Amino acid sequence: MAYQALYRVWRSQRFDDVVGQKAITQTLKNAIIQKKTSHAYLFTGPRGTGKTSAAKIFAKAINCKHSVDGEPCNECETCIAITEGRLNDVIEIDAASNNGVEEIRDIRDKAKYAPTQAEYKVYIIDEVHMLSTGAFNALLKTLEEPPQNVIFILATTEPHKIPLTIISRTQRFDFKRIGTQDIVDHLGYILKQIDVDFEEQALYVIGRAAEGGMRDALSILDQTISFSDEKVTLTDAMQVTGSLTYEMMDQYISNCVTGDVEQALEVLESILSSGKEARRFLEDLLLYCRDLLMFQQAPNLLAEKVGNLTQNFKELAEQTAAEKIYQMIQILSDTQNDIRFTNNANIYLEVATVKLAKSVRKPVEISNETQPVPTEEIATLQQQIEHLQKELTELKKNGVTAKEAEPVKATRATSSKNTLRIPTELVYKVLNEATKDHLLNVKNVWDDLLQMMSVTQRAMLKASEPVAAGPNGLVIAFEYEIVCGRAMEDEEMQLAVHNNLSRLVNNYAPDMICITKESWPKLRQSFISQNKETPGEQPNEDRPVMNEENHLLTEDEPAEEVNNQVVDEAIAMFGEALVEVIND
Image (tube, rainbow, N blue to C red; front, side, top):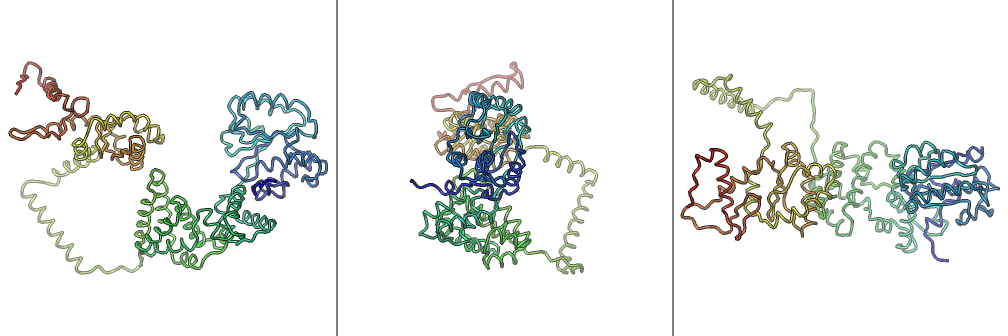
């Protein structure tokens, strides 16, 4: 017989075999013993936690004629047929591929007929959240008025997508993530049964990498056995899962805590060059910092989850203040968000390493006694006060009073608060290099770019348009000043525009400059005026000139359009009768 994966061979066949779901399995066993089973059940929870296995065990237990304490015997013809999937009265359906109204109507019609081989007809619908709205409506009637001797078991990882009318007609059981210790114990049992040697610490690495899913844990164990040489070792588990050893993280975090930037960067380079993936490295660091905090507060609880802890880890937890660990977790979390939008994750990791090492702050000692102020500081402060008093006296001699000065100060404060500062120099720099081709390329992909942004970013950019583009910069004009201000401060959105444009326009990744549409005509006209040729100066062919359509004029397009615009503005301001146009 061909080799079978461990998660298939060791699939639970009795309620007691289901790991980490004692409350659910005991409830189902009691319902079978007391003959108080429901007509419909909803099993929810993360992947690989035993939902489908529990459903098949339930189907066997309720149809087994030799069941003991609610458990199937797994030896009678009915149990064997259900295990092998050949009993006509136990139907397992994948809703991901059978999600239409017709499929559910077919189930509804066949459910009316009595079971032929077993006592109960059981329908197990996996990934039920994939059903269409019409299919849910077709299923609703059957659940509302179920036929006799028919049981529906719905399984899903996303219960929030199931209509409440369906949920209210079922008994819901929420399968929880399986604890690391439970996974380790089960993996150890399996390895002993198949006669494979192992290091217990390796099982803890696999258990944590599985993130609460037994199926994932068994798949990783299968890979590790294939990778190892007749023994599952910690090194093998680290290689397969891409995790870091505690020793490696001890060294890295120790260097960061002591502020040794150079050594921390060397350790980071060594870790990344060994093939560790940047995003997984960040996850391991966050878990490590979490473990430091947990060890400080509940060391026994952490020992159960992780297994053996290194001596360096214990010393580091005792010597590092909790506030420092909070700072490190915040820096790592921010870095984790940043690397989602870049292909150069290593750069962000190096920056984060510098931040981690530089964020060391010596604790401020607080004393109840008043500290004496040095006499030098007192003398300096007295000199500053005397200087300010002299300036005030001079102002009074010149007739300036405090009452007169106050309104001016208030006006300036109000003006600076309410007025958005337009980055004129940056706009001019882009216009100096701007070309029509760059702008047309951006406009051609603008709609595609919006679709690649998040919902919030797309909403901000909806009321904007690109007005100028060069090889290194892109000017975007926003219709509303408040949206423009938010866009200026939103570094995440600017980075998203930078990265997504590079994918859409042949590695074109300009810096984004935000202005308001109201300020754009003035900026454009001011730039044109500054770039006019002065008498006696040699014409500069490289200097760009812009037309009304916000594009650069090429050699084939006459510059008369610029002059026409100036004339039109002059007529609008002074009237046609007072304006005389003289051609040079």
